[in-house]
Image 1 (cartoon, helix red, strand yellow):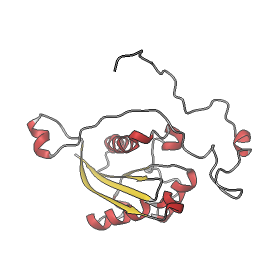
Image 2 (cartoon, rainbow, N blue to C red):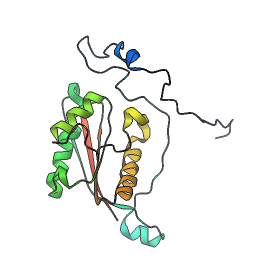
Image 3 (cartoon, rainbow, N blue to C red):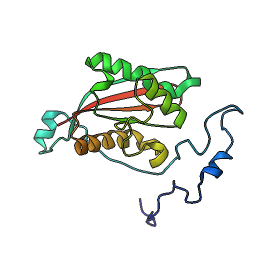
Length: 189
């Protein structure tokens, strides 16, 4: 559309004045005994992404060189009050479909809406709190959470990490506010 071009040169999410002391004074967002604060939740960012998802025959016909192939996808739902846990049953469903275990994935991109949500998912899936192959380059708390393109961001961050590490299989998961969870498995080619 026609209009003035706006150039963004500074990431809107990081706050240079944030300290441990200022974080300790933040109030919980969901009740007085809650664990989620503005300091351990992902920021909502503006972003855009484009990616090509094509069949093998379409890639060949158009001279495209695939970087990864989709092994499978799964979705599952949980009660809306525990919406952040949706990736757990989605991941278990996907692994059952593919005959894989969590240990088969060299890289995992877990969308982290909140720190407590991502910890609950990694713990339930049997991963360590600081597993180096989970969000190896930072997750949504560090990078921001652009709602309209989080899926593309997770998928491509996963492919890049598999290429950097030489890993073969990767897993991306996403929770959705009303209780849905999504899981995607890819193989680097």
